[in-house]
Length: 335
Image 1 (cartoon, helix red, strand yellow):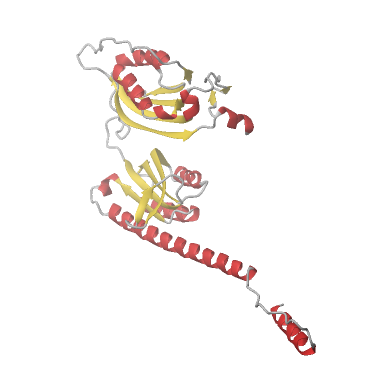
Image 2 (tube, rainbow, N blue to C red; image 1 turned 120 degrees about the vertical axis):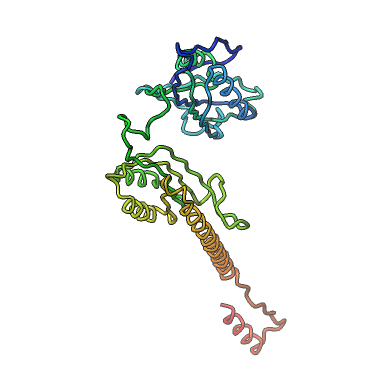
């Protein structure tokens, strides 16, 4: 993690190439974290793209997320913890607070963001990219991880050129969103000697019109899409599917599906998963509607019992023996 200050024009250098005229490629993974004004949430992507373009890097995968950060007054009134916390190599770094009060950015608020980028660039440009980030990082904190192999990734091939027995696939898990689900799923995959290559989690809820899952922040449902790799000679795919289904149901994922890349070419597994996901969304929406209706009826019933109207009676002007007995009887009936 390196703190950097942006600004100024980006330097420019000529692209270097190897002796045979073909540039050796290197893959890098970059993360950027920091604070940006709310109005510059989109501008930050332009800054990242400018740095990557100047470095001669081609972005293969990119993603990011933003959260509303507390203002200085809210942080002081709360637990006193800063909105941005950085820890690197066992050391915790507390960012300085140099935001002028009353400025436009201070009034509009700040966003905390983390961006993830996977890119490929010539080996000769890696050093230049590192120097470029030192002075033109788009956010306060960044990290860079570069691949060991200079050739295109050979993860799915044997080192000695023999037939590789490793298989890749995609695992789908869908159901009610609960804390601790991912920890249990990844533990099971590790026990089954399965490696996670890529993970994507989306929260959302059922769409009454489409009768399907739609992404939304803080929704009651969640879908996990996990890219995996495993050794076919030591992993029983049938047993793996059974364990995925068992653990999925234990943690709340009622709909699961494992599709290997060989099976995905047949296009037979994914439609089944999508139909089961639709069915779960419909059942979930119906059950939730019934629960809401029952809750409303219970509230109305409780309110009716608490506010039950008492029958009215008029006191006679002259409380003789007869009217007095009648008033006592009416009062007893109301109690």
